[in-house]
Length: 385
Image (cartoon, rainbow, N blue to C red; front, side, top):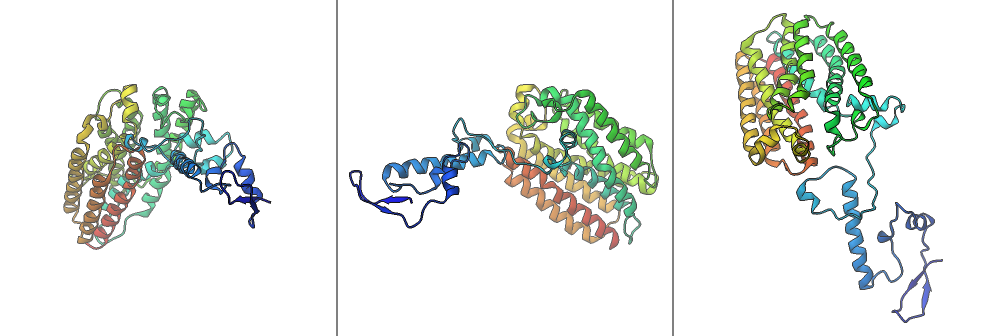
């Protein structure tokens, strides 16, 4: 039975404890990784020496827990003082429950990170909904077809991106464990997987009401050449905007069988401006590694003036969306949702901590709400003109 010391350093009186230490706690105290000793009562717990030790160990424990969740920025690193031999526990993903042979390919297609698929779907959904007749609901068949194709097309784009970037990814902390960078998938296997996903998405695109092989071919070309732009220009996020928002052209054509520049062009540009905004925030996660390996981005180009730049792109995106709505004769409900979406962008820009990779990622992911607000606004603005 455990005992509690009630005397000083020279006292020999010990009183049996009424609360014996549970076996689980005794096991944890002697476990090499799960050692929780600083958090459990011990004899002479309240002596000044042990209070100081417990406090320092508690801080180290908190720092260790911080490193197990997400990457941190330069300012955050000052708060971390973990022990050199501590083990970092990676947060598991549902992919880890798939068969071992499939896991690398699921990670290659980013199936556990659907935000990129949403960014593909939104421009198409905006455009296809705008193409609906005034006072009517959109053609949900075309929306469903594109929603089914988007994960495969996005997976193909991620795969070809990792194929071209596999040598760079090895040198970037956030990407060094990607399947092709780590060697879990060979370049040849990656190219085969790319072709397989592209073939699946192509088969689904063929089911659209109006299909254009020229529009799809341009979509594929932009997706395949985007990774190369990182080596050529700091405006790689603008090229990504052209790529991701090509769906706005495809969406209108799928419904109408033709294009109306007065509506499609400002909608396409608004999406491009929005993409530059959110992907510039995203690029701030890797800016230090990008400098080392020679990759360009708007995050590096804008530097300390990033918030001023992305504020300008936010204004441009909202302005061109308003122009789109005016040319398409959308009803008042759209402008209510546009105002809410404007607030969402303003919140992102005002609160973004560009020195914290974790916060940059949170703001990046939050853009799904901007896309959803605009879609709801277009939908209601079309139904209630």
